[in-house]
Image 1 (cartoon, one colour):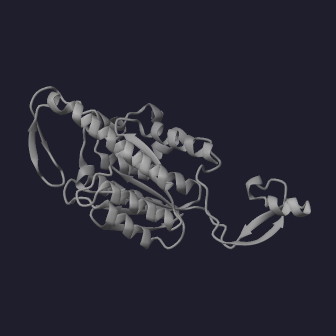
Image 2 (cartoon, rainbow, N blue to C red):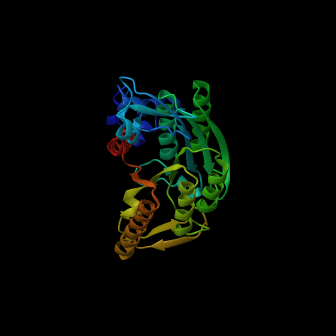
Length: 306
């Protein structure tokens, strides 16, 4: 099979097995990785122990060293691997497939599957939450192979479903998610961030609430850049339909393209800025971009932060 980094999303989407697709994405960019770019959380400090060669320097208590010239390492009540949730938007707007030939939901589900495989490889517990106007699915994190196969099967069914999606209230759903996760975790939100009920400000407040609860929050903002950012439609009358409200309009692309691009650019910029101010890590992804390239760029960025 070709290297996953050489496959476009639309090509990779033709792979029959969702599990194979997710594992292929991971194999494409994580070969030889021995250390997870995601770091687990140590919940409560318990005691010190003597430093041993090979211990990571970031765990050394330098204040103790300054007072006593003794190298000691912090120990915690719960030194577990990372607890990881993916919160995937499964609303109707995520069913949109633009020029890339793959829907945002299928792109996001494959991304989620690849992350589940990656986390399991690092022996990190990983779970899944799906939402539209409310939370639809909650699968608590585990680190077993059987559990990951269960998650991949759920994602495969979700990405294949064509009907049943509703409108979005990400703000309310994310507030609910914050209350449902009992212990500190890494929460990866995969969404187009389009709202039909609340506003973008409400969504950012919900993300901030997740941070306030002690979670590390990452947002993968998934869009079809060609049509949803640049409005690259042929210059002939186009009938567009809101996938969540059903409202339809006929437009002449050339007449609205500039205004649309400005509005779309302002939306993305405002979300990015608000996430930065809230301490939420933000990554804009185009569904035309190969999965492996998108994840590599993100993981490389994370590694630079630690």
